[in-house]
Image (cartoon, rainbow, N blue to C red; front, side, top):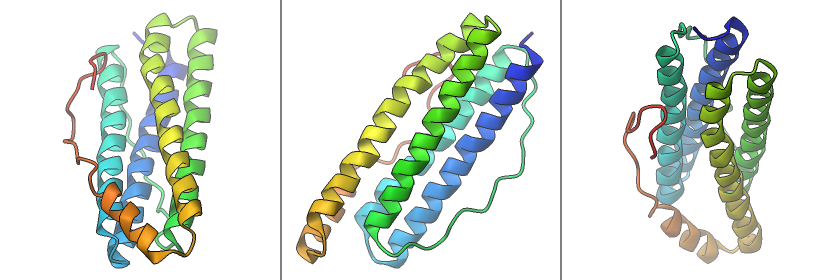
Length: 175
């Protein structure tokens, strides 16, 4: 049976991952409203990825005999002034999630829960990728500045990101 404090922390992280999905879905809607279909597609893919993160935690918690306790999901921001503002917010959010994952790993170490620590290593690695991806897009949008042609080229490139499926993997398996 999983430690009660770790169970609660994992339930909080499930909520945080679903909130992340909600944020990215809101960002997708804003891009759609602005006619930036490629950016919208990228955010749809990110939404599904966050749902999969929540499900990975959900399945892990169940596999350890824990109880999944879903919580209310906070309402996300719904409007941004520019694609750059959206991705700056996305980058900042990923830094926040990284901090949460690191705190979970610290708790698992404190509780000497090696199984949870091992599971969290996947998330630690994933957060490096998440931050790098968002920061790279921020950098490109800053380079593009007010150049509409550059923005359209980025939009086209962003639309090439494939949209995954929900629940493709169980905890402990590779994506």
